[in-house]
Image (tube, rainbow, N blue to C red; front, top):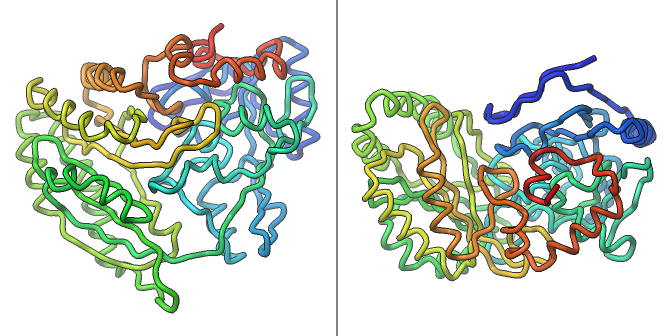
Length: 434
């Protein structure tokens, strides 16, 4: 039976693809082997939340809904094994039932665990890495139907490649995570002058467990978010139901959707709209379970590009981007998001080998984004910017060879475990070579 696949943002579509829904690892391995022997291209898809075509199937689409549960949890060690198709929302709730948690998360939970790690999804925290750094072991189904168990001790080179493998090596069937005891975070959110945030960026980043900010173009205001572990004995004090609905649903989604539609019809009003939006921001503080603080619901459809730059250059990059926006005449209703991460040792992680800052730009899905995104790419290219694998960019294999010291090591592993390129698609052929 063939189907049409479409990603969340509508940037990628595939028609007439064969759909496989294995209910076990054995079924998955057999299905992958059969498809590869028939010369078909195979692609596992998660929630389709990437903006790029990294998960776009060409011929055979594997859905991992049948592998979407916690299969083992050891509270003492914190090691938790989970099926690769498990959604982050389900995973977070499941971990909480064992009094465990992820040490760090991104700001949405719509992805599957394997999709999030394979594309290098991350949260923020100067001393913490992306989600893939929390992988202790993984199982990878390769084109010949083998199931490779990968860890720092076993198939270590495949482990280094597959934690952020962009789906190019095979189909991950399960992941073992190193979790931590469940914890509460104190969230402090407040608007501040942008110059104050940029001048004190290192102090904000290093002085908080998790720091990020959103800057609204055409204004001098940034919304800062500081999340820190609470002292022993401090209990939860979540946002009230009414305040939470007003802030997180009414203003952040419904009103924001309406203001973007207005921006589409009356672009010249965008600076005024953004200034009004910053005036509507108010400080709030609350304490809640970590995953509830990390994650927000985002329902306004948009396009996104995100680049990782060496952290020491982030302020300069923001200042140059701001100058371009001011001089360009473009009106941009979406805020720009800035986060941080510690250096890691994963070959294709955007934070590989360097302390990193992330700059994410967005545009409403009904507004043109090409000129804005191209200008952003031109700026970050001067600072060895690495694009998020799942967000819009135009970089190719030769660019990545210069950006990642282990790029050719990754290709060597790919060529060994998938010599027929059964898991390639147009996106992987562009970023890794044909």
